[in-house]
Image (cartoon, rainbow, N blue to C red; front, side):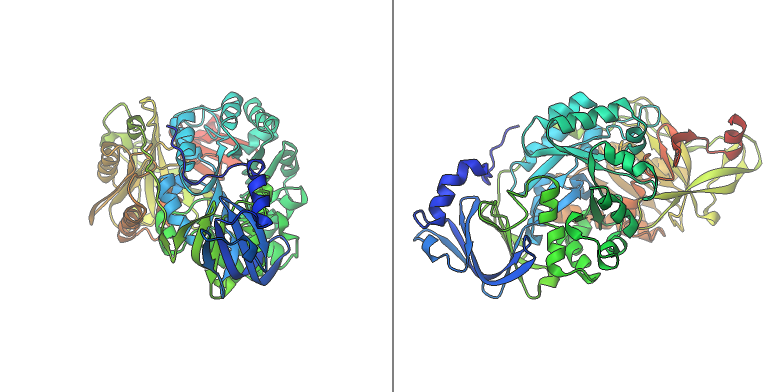
Length: 613
């Protein structure tokens, strides 16, 4: 689908004659923003009494007097008493994690001052392959956002022996996607870091295809920051990484020439700790970036997006101008597009925000994107033609058989008694899990999920090829205090059907309903059934932002009523199938352990594993 955007961003080379003519006053500006305090992220200064003249989508002149650029048709925005800053940029974000389409995401974040970002659509890519990536790119091009897409590096995140996904990318697919245009900016987070370190041909080939295309490669390295293999990873040409959870993680990446991305998502809260690399260690901040990674629609509604992250960084002691640098210029420089975005300088695209009050409050009152006023006082004032997804992407959940209670049974190696098992323990507000050993009761040859031990069953069913592949294990830390279950087709990164609960009947009911509504999230408990339909690839809703946020909140409330008090529980639980993040996860192929020696499958039963060894 080729829909032409009304928010044009032509190359600078094409705009030079009219920009120069406007700057000298011969041609009149299309827009002037007059008399504000300029947040100059290039020099690190606040400059009062400045004005900006715009011609079309780009900035023609920045100075104290732009009267020579004003004509009868020039639109003038008075900025006296306000700050003028470059639009905020998210340096690492998965739009699908909001459950919004790109259009509705844009409408949610533009009023917050976010004018662009670097998006890794590896969720939809794992379901629909290059078709899914292309759909998101095409939709992004219709919006006012400076939306740069990355081609997913990990489709799947590991290999077919560890998980089943809907598609598969290799060097050829990476090369093809990167040829689609300059807004295909690079390779998405390389989660298979063991594959890079130990020379997996596919992973190395994908990085080579990226570098040959003159693009950048993003990282995802979760071994310790002092591990000898981090420099090996960097040697592959990976120059940015968001898996920083300590100040040392930030420091070691910067020392190796990487950009360190400090994350504040809905469920992963890393900025307060990682920002100490600046506030306490005193490291140069120009290779530090603020990012969100994953934020839910309800977080966007109640907290914000990059505006929230910048406020949070300032609250940790970062100077306001420095925090803005971390969310604008640093990000643009990391991806090699600082000539176009990330600062208010002549020639740059006119992505500009106006802020009231103290700068530290990040109170955005107007957003200009590509030279057009698109949002004011928290509301969109611009609109554009809707993007329509094809029917085939609304039918991606195919298990191949109807689920029953028997699918959730765990056969034990003994008929009665107790057995030692591996259990996944959820870590609140962090992406990692822990492996714990517990002894569980066996009744009639089946393992029992004992609520007294805060034990739930967790199951993953392959939903792309109707293969029937599935696995069932145990998880603790969910917190259900009554019979309850949750089923979801949002299950990073293969996005198979993930079901968690302490009652086999309710697990079956929730799973059947998730399949019946062609994807989404379902919570079933004594309080009833709560549904959140996500028919687009089983990941996103076509509904407006406010409706999606309300449905997301309804799932949170349902989980809390059942006793699950995890912060942003849906997002935390959705990662329990992501088999490249330590320490232990479940895929449709079984339990997977991620350790210092790599990734391997293990048995649920400790004694069985020991016997095989």
